[in-house]
Length: 218
Image 1 (spheres, one colour):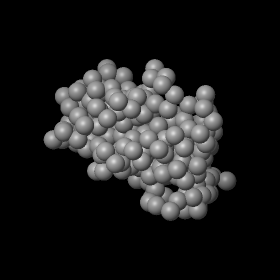
Image 2: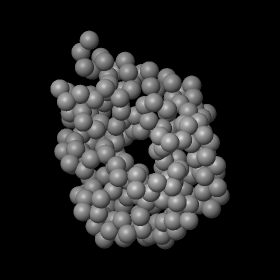
Image 3: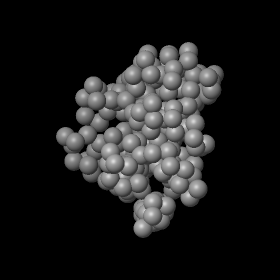
Image 4: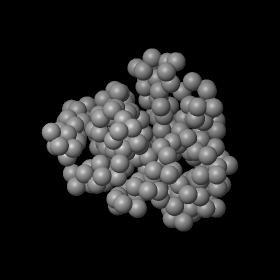
């Protein structure tokens, strides 16, 4: 089986599972971390328009090769933000007001932003607490340039996945009441995207289920 046939088969399976799990619109983001630009080109040929990267250097490289909506979903480093905002259209992992201030300073174009919420209080792994989440949301809503899409989370390993999604669903419902203009939820990866969708995810970030296990030989 050639590479395009392999990706086509995997992508069709993922799309079918999403359609079964969802009773609302879901945006599929193909995560291309560690895979070559040639795979991104195949995905583009197959109709994928949303691509996700965790690493700035890969985002810079691949976004120059393949047009589309590029999403940055890795943990943010202050010294990378000028570069990240040059190629990304959507940020999934904002959890620090200081980082938003740098986005306001550096971003050459308007960004759509998800705020990452922590589900276990371990903020060093990424994610804001509820109080900081709402402060950040207010700051973005007051921006004349950038827009708030909603919230994002990654279920922590220390919490059962179902419990994490039940917690996230409640956080999301409360957040939408306070910020009705930002109803989106970015959650779910290859191992749990169906569960994430059933708990309200509107954006899923899927890599290995489409592109296979990551290998340095690729």
